[in-house]
Image (cartoon, rainbow, N blue to C red):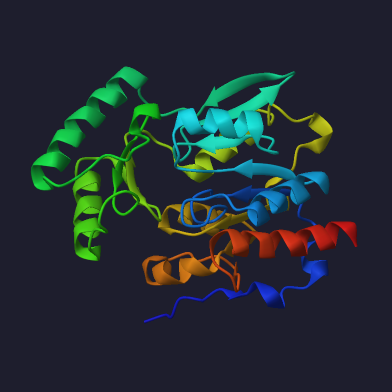
Length: 273
């Protein structure tokens, strides 16, 4: 059996290797945040990237309501939300959106999701929807540890299998299982925004794919780890490495927001050096 390649330490990457990087794509929960909080260190790192001239794009499973806030108030150029369903961006001071083609109209997809929700509750009577579910448009988030006692790995795997057996996409994050109907994921959402001309940024700033770096922390980031020339996991990803067929190229020494800051420090040094 072929052994999967494990990520190399981020501390070992040289500055010349990072010279082509022009844009930073990042997961939010437990990549930028730490135990549910955005630390001053991580937020300062976000600003340091922006001030150094990088394009900054959060790519998250969080809901439309949260992504509206991120796009308006954070130092970012665009936000891909609900695991790729849409991208929010600012244009001349106005928050705009670009939906990712899903294969069916929203009414049909949402009806399917309601039916799936009933089946989840039938199989797992203790299942609780995420506290941010009211602000979601396209997916169902089942809380597996954010505001509830942690689910066992066996229960999580059974939940993922149930959703996929019903024809839905299902991804495990650090806090939720997200499930949806529609032919998209984090990678496809970002690709659609880029192919549409990367609205929200000027044409001369638009990056090509191989100039993007992605940093994440959980199995729902695997489509990104598999697709990027530059991919980084924060240290807390180690608990999920046995689930990943496509791990990131590098992994930080520190977890969560401190790991994000570790990444930012080096890429900013590369740009300013």
